[in-house]
Length: 302
Image 1 (cartoon, rainbow, N blue to C red):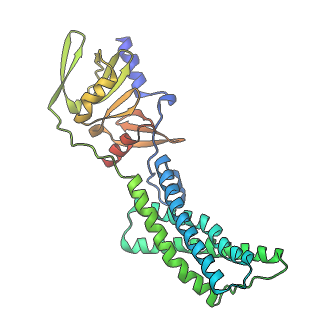
Image 2 (cartoon, one colour; image 1 turned 135 degrees about the vertical axis):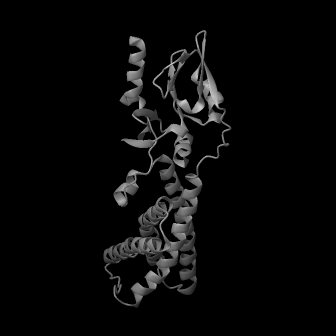
C-alpha cells in the first residue's frame, strides 16, 4: 500500500527534469505573447521563408544593377552598388517584420477587418525599416566619399518607395504564410477505432477497464503503470515501446520517453519555460518533451 501511494505521489507531482515539453502558442495577444509562442519548428519556418525572400530580393537587386549599368553607363559602379546594395541590406530586418505578421495571421486567424488593420500596422514598421535603413546607409556611404545623398522624406520620392514596398510587403507576408502553414500543419493521424475495453494483466490477475478510464501510462522499469481515473495504478509487465504501438490506434500519444497519455482525457497544456511543456489531465501534470513534436500537434488538434 505504501509503495502504491508513493507511485501516485510521483505521478501527481512529476519532477522538473521530466517536464521536457514543446511550447504552444500562449493565449495572450500582442507581440510579447507572439514571441513567447515561437518554438523550434516555427523558427525554422521563419528562417526558411526569410532565406527564400532574401534570395528573391537579391535576384531583383542584381537585375536592377544590370539595368542601371545599361541605362546609365557613365554612373560609377561603386555608386550603383551602394544604391542597390543598401536596399538589399535594409530588407533583411524588414522581412522579419513580414514574417511576424504572417505568424500572427496563422495563429490569430483574424476577421477580414482585423486582418486589414493588423497588416496596415505591420506595413508601417516594414517600410520604416526598409526605407529608413537604405537612406541611412546611402547617406553614410556618400558622406564617406565627400558627397551628399538627397532624399525628400515628404515628397514624391517617399511616395514612390512606399508604392514599391506595398506589393513587396504583401508578397512577403504571403510567402511566410504559406511556408509557416506547411511547417506548422498537424501530423495526419488515422482516426482511432477505439474498443470499449482494454485488458491489463497485473501479474496473474486480469483487469478489464474502459479505454477512456485509462488516463495515462507511465514506464516503471520493466513494467508499465496504468493510471486509471478511479485512482488505481495496476502494473503490467511490458515495455512502454510495445504499448505505444498497441495504444496509438486507441488515441494514446507518446509525450515523453516515459509517458503515454490518453489524448481524449487532456484538459490543458501548460508552458514550463525554456521550451518545456506539461500536459494537464485534471490535477495531473505529465511531461511533454519538445522532442515529440507530433504529440504536440496531435494534442493541439484536439
